[in-house]
Amino acid sequence: MGVGRRLAAAAVMTAGAVLVSGLVSGHAAGIHRSGQAGGAGATSAAVAIHTTPVSARTAVTPFVAPHVSLKIGAKGAAVKQLQTRLLELGYAPGKIDSRYGGTTQTAVWAFQKVQGLSPTSTVSARTWRALENPKAPQVLVPNGKPDRVEVNLTKQIAVLYRAGQVKLITHISSGSGIPYCETATWQGKVQRFCGDARTPTGDFKTTWRRSGWHRSYLGQLYNPIFFNGGIALHGALSVPLAPASHGCVRLPMHVAEALPSLLGTGVPVHVRGKFPR
View 1 (cartoon, rainbow, N blue to C red):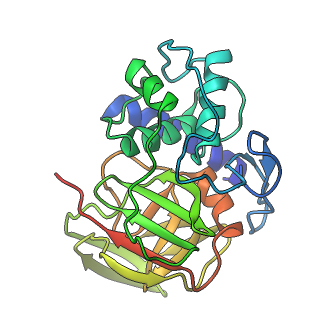
View 2: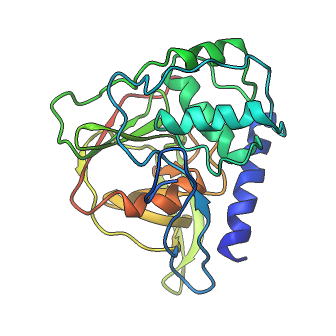
């Protein structure tokens, strides 16, 4: 399956998860194209993320919400207002297309979690009010480097800082914490792999990376950026609300496609917290 189809599948699967349980250059509200994702047959996709770091005050401009209830599948001017506001605040709603799909949903989840709201598929009065008076994400490392990533396991979000300001806030799914044993063919041999599916807390740095789909012994990782041995920030076709990985930090596909352009090698990655089950 080509990357374009995988990106479309990611949006569908993310939206389905709701029911079950841009970025490189240009103006803040614009739609931008990242570079080639790498790998044969790879295609670029329109992704939008705030291109200027967001002030710690977070209220970039005054905003008057339409206060209409929105759900997955909604279309129209109110959805465009939602997407534009999320982008302005440093979230990643994907293409500003007036359609409430899977990419916008992951940005809504991230925003709701930062605001202390229970993540939901519905954008209603409480979320609109929060968009009018947003809170900044909690700073996990107050004296951290100006360029860094903070992974909040408690809230299941990651924040990328550039020049000391918020560049990107995204929904994640980290290690499930459920011990596993899986059999896979690796390096030409059938092997059994066991672990605790935990994303360790601590202070790390980004190391090696791969472009496009990278096969590991526990599955496929999209555009992985490793920061702790075999643990990486990477795109996945499923990024549910609950922690679900073997230990890596799963990202929505459109975020993972653009992240390598923003995150270099040797950048600090701070992992804190614990997901309450």
